Image (cartoon, rainbow, N blue to C red; front, side, top):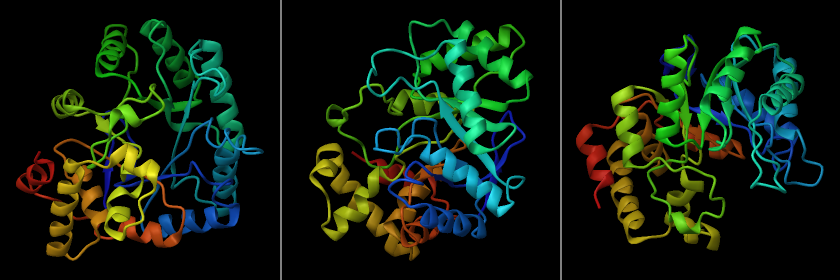
Length: 318
């Protein structure tokens, strides 16, 4: 698997990032370890989790970070791994109440370091934004953790372009570190925005793409395979929730074009969906979320394929 260095950092990462949100809960510990082993054996080194992952399940609190931390210790691969996690997410029972104070950030950084069993988090994400909190307060708090050696770099997830620009402008003008990456919802399949229940999620739109093209900031998108939409569409296994979120004439046409490209290159339609992201004219490292080894192998199929600008434009055609 090819690698790249995230701009404005010294972090050299694999072209795919392994999402571990289900590890230790829906994906049992033993299976999670097998997935991590296989990902690293295939040349992967970039893993993603979050403070809040699995908190919505009975007994799931801390499961993802704890399982990843146990694997890092058991495998002895901490020095090879680039570990990212997210914090400052609202309490799941009170999503309308922000958790973006310096105290909340400090609490989550400490908890993540504890469960991951690491001294420093390589890439720390703010999982949500809180528009009422000034960017100055947020950037000052994050920089304090960088200076303390608790995190190396930081990014933002579910932030608008306007807020990212405002935050980084403040950081530049005050000699501070800024966001080095953005983690929005983005895939080849265009989501039906009205069907997405969590309105705090931010989708990468055309303005966002233009921002990243001009700035060169890395995008590390979640739900990068649209929950397996194209594979499920081809196999006739779409769930009703998948249909609500992604089914549309546009996505049916994109599926047809992606399948034609897959046949031309001799790869899976998943490979085309991921290559659509990794072939953009700015750094993109998709977060994948396989729950089985077969799903992981499907993600890895043709991962080093690079599509041409004409092929990208054809896939996007409306």
